[in-house]
Image (cartoon, rainbow, N blue to C red; front, side, top):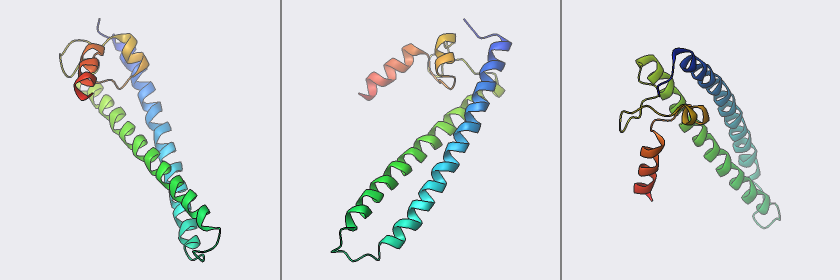
Length: 128
């Protein structure tokens, strides 16, 4: 069953809030990564024989986690923007693979879903 106009508007509002929240997270991750990079560049002048080298290794791991989180947030932002574009184009809620309506339940759980549950499961099976 296709979404009615009010349901699409409600999901569009949710997506817009997600964009705002996601951009805030990206900004925080950028600041954290920049701060850690500055701190670790100062620490690289430490004598390699000192015990502080272990702290450096820990910060490098933190940087990798922060960078990974930033990439995830950027990917999520692209998915959300794509969903907002589909709303504007009038194709939101239609599976990109089979062209059948995506269930309301799925869209409520994952408002940026591109495929119906059946096609998503088939896609995941092919990837595995």
